[in-house]
Length: 314
Image 1 (spheres, helix red, strand yellow):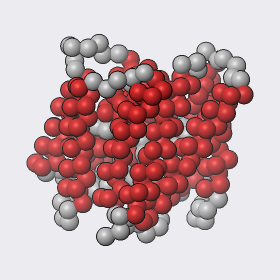
Image 2 (cartoon, rainbow, N blue to C red; image 1 turned 60 degrees about the horizontal axis):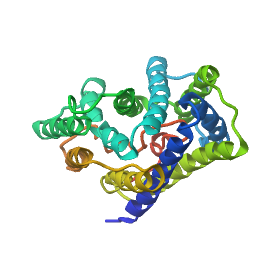
Image 3 (cartoon, rainbow, N blue to C red; image 1 turned 60 degrees about the vertical axis):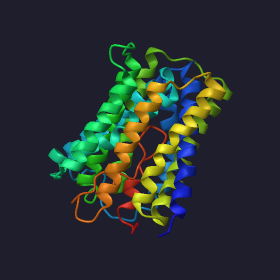
Image 4 (cartoon, helix red, strand yellow; image 1 turned 180 degrees about the vertical axis):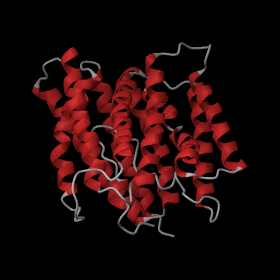
């Protein structure tokens, strides 16, 4: 068993956590719309470089236009909600909520992929959702727009992943990549005019860092999945909670409370159970969580699944 992919993945998710810390830093001064617009603009050259390796013939018209449109809407909503949630909530709390994405993928795989989910995975989903309630503490703390954004981010991120699982083998990589990027560029470009603020060169550099960090994390995640089995690489995403705690304490004066620690632990354990359950031969026909190799998408971190689906990964 080759575990080198775990180390590549740990590095990738450390880079992604740094990416999210930059979002939080810039979010104090700029709207999510403006940050997404410029990070998308700066990401175009990097992603275009990746797309140049796609040698499949065809055009830019999607094979499944409605699924592609829905995925594009999900990706755009995901980016907006992620940027807002990281701006207004503690980093560790956002990650704890986003870690519910595998639970939602498991549920969504039933109507979209026709997946049959047994009692074990259903039990893990129920336990994981209890963990989400522990983090949110309904009635004990105020439920804010930031919490709603994080929950929405987890849901639409899971739905986008399921759609890629459904149509990814038939759609060209360039279609799956460019449509969400163009949508982010156009829609966020229009929305940012509501609260646009001129950006000094230092903050523009921060936006450039967002694009570079998102691209770098994606590349190392591709390397990780090529090096090791998905069941080894996928759990490494939970290391982001450690970086969130470190960055939150050092740079933003945040402290992680016991409810977030307990709820995140419950969510992580249920997510790990689903991963290892899917990895067990004969348990899952579609393995939707294991096949979701991309991090929850944002404007500056491209989805790696389209780049992996035509190569042999472990």
